[in-house]
Image (tube, rainbow, N blue to C red):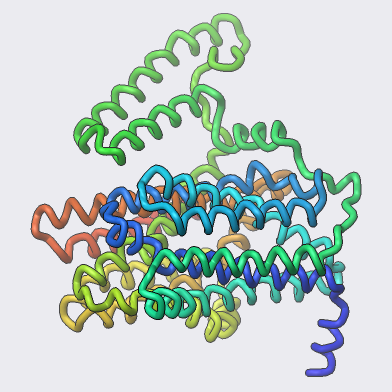
Length: 474
């Protein structure tokens, strides 16, 4: 068996292993930065919980959303040049972040890192696919996902060693920049460009934007969504309070609905649809859009592990700041050790029950954060993270499988491609929404309330997913 595995590994060429090594180093740097970032922004730089969450969420949104738009760069300009440019952008962002302390400049540095990472994600995945064959592609992607977990496993310990041994948290960014520089060296020395067949050329930006309209809705609907996003940004910036946000959002929606009335009347009268903004609001692929919104809630909850839970731990016991990165190692340790066993066990069941049960287990995890922390001490929050990882191992791997099940045959690639949009939405909005929930319950002296609210949030997601499945199957 060992001989068979070694023989299989030898089938991969130098470019494949260069891509794998680059991904390992990139993940090590990324998770090293993320392990302490929220504490650094909120406490060390004094930005506070709400502004730090807004910055953190925006960075993650850019990192997960932009690959949808720029995923075709590697096919146009070549894998090796695109990967090298992305690593240069990432490295410059890390060294820039190590030197700045003001909110605008730190925001710009983190967005630079996110931009480079957004270019990097599809390039690495595309390189793994192109450097493998039909026979060994499954093994190739298994290796690819394994190194992601290995990088996320060791990264928190690297961040803690750098920070505690030097006494300068900003040097974490320097360490990340050095690791990414090593990844750049691997790319330049060992990576060879991969030929791309003409029929495999990536989609143009125009095609991607057209598909996005197909999924989300027409231009009028996107205009309404843009207005709501601007109101939300104003709330995050403190330009309006919660009541003003609801009032502004409600008036904007009503205004757009009022504009729809004459436009729909004209369509009925003329028997044809208008173009651009001269048409009423319409949703795109409603089935996929609802799925995206439901699973965005799951990843918004997951984002609390990297943002509001570390802030809760250090607020509960300031001495835990010396060890806060260790909490970020719990999830990858559990996944590395038990994902195969859990996956084999859950393979007996349909994707939907697996995901619903996994989300309900995650509800128990987030609801227990406060009770465990207050009753047993800050270290006990690690037990909540263990519970979360069990739920995650049940719902996360089966999400893509479920998308493939519900997708119409003619839209399978579209559904799978946009099935990852929940990461961008959830990670983008989750930290800020969680931060405002914490502030809301703290102002009312209900310290445990926010964690029960997160638990109820997860239960509602599980219920929504179950109802969604019934409707879709119906």
